[in-house]
Image (cartoon, rainbow, N blue to C red; front, side, top):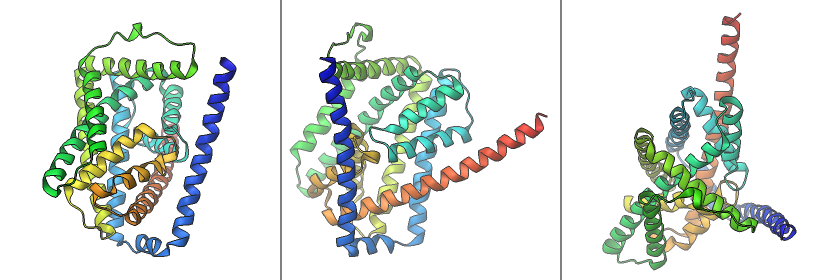
Amino acid sequence: MRYFSRIIKGLLKHIKIVVTIGILGFFIYYFINNKEDLLKVLSVQPLLLLGILIFYSIIFYLNGIFIKVILKSFNKKISILESFYVSIISSLGNYFLPMRGGAVIRSVYLKKKFEFSYEHFVSTLYGYYIIVFLVNAFVGLVSLIVITIKYDVVSIPLYLFFGGLFVSMLVLSFIKFPVKKIKGSKNKIVDKVLSIIRNILDGWNMIVENKRLLVSLILITLIAFVVGVGLFYIEFKALGIDVTVIKVLLYNCLSGVSLLVSITPGSLGIREGIFSITSDILGISNEQIMQLALLDRGVMLSCLVGLFVGLWALMGIIKRKLSVSSK
């Protein structure tokens, strides 16, 4: 059984790599053969590009605030600057590594620098996802209802998906499950699923027991959601895509829940696939989805690299000054 599980695990790892290479190859092939889409992205006004950069910087800063808030709840101190830096390196990890690899980088950094246990980090992160998915599912349902009423467009699969996700998150958030009674399994795949469930429930229990932490995480989630809507709205306008705020809300919700299937670096191709499937209700074409993908990922990567270099240099200067002053 263990031998079989190892084979499955190795096979899945290779499949993820092949899928990632395949999707990346498709993107390159597409823009080589559709130069007009590439030129449209490259012709975006500099002022709008600056706006997208600013919104992404705010999102990464909020991720840093999340790290600071979590550490504070465990009586660990980290500066705003360093939490921002950790946010950037973990985001770079998510962009270049599959399965949210940035979370692993972040947990290793916090363990080494602040002796913050990996178990606590994973549990609180998974618990935080309950809030994130609850907000996205609720707003997604409201957006669908408004779109149905206003545009007479119905998507039963999306209703079922957001409805199921919303109910699931409500159940997890209001019912306190006996985490310790969830036993493992001899099957590694089943055991991994059970381990994730235990981490989610354990993390959520820790969060709700600390009311200040709960309120802080809810505020971070709501602010990040609003910033995300603003970011995507600017991206749509930058490419000359006529879109309403309600559809941008739905677009943002779909982007948020793509975390559920993050098997490629930065959910490359996964998020675009979700948008393509729901393009009718979003009111955008597949060509526009590809343009948005290139603009969004290109600016985000530029922002990450720029912030990483800047923060790394700044932290180096501060470290040298502290070293000199301590002598």
